[in-house]
Image (cartoon, rainbow, N blue to C red; front, side):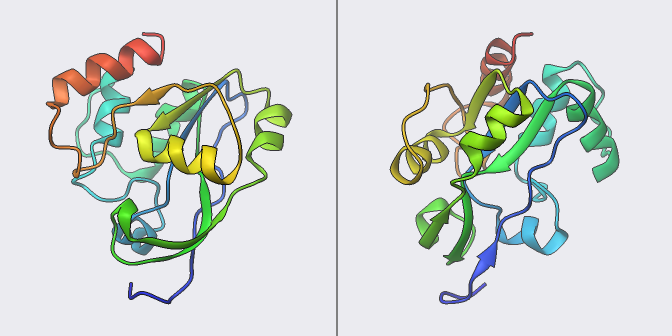
Length: 162
């Protein structure tokens, strides 16, 4: 997407009884094209989720991916609801409009734990919505290449309680 074009994030994704909310910043270009959370095959999010819950990751479709998070009480949402993205990196986010309904969503859904997919998601939340307990997961983004997948998985398992 070119700069100056306004894009919207997806609505929250959750099953019947979510207890944990994982917040990202804003969907990548490919995610928006596919209309799927973490739709880029280079993003390690789904591979990490399947690893945390000891599910085989054999190129599952989006419905199978959603079933794993729903079964395990995970909800997904983004901190920014609308912006003018310039590419897929968080540094390309221009004129963000923050998802200020998140505190109410957390309360209404009975979410007991909020995790951030990377420090940028946490910083955007603090900047645009307010203070919240800081629990940041290593980013699943391909831009976070400094950490090996196995190290990310260990950290995600620890913080998701497995």
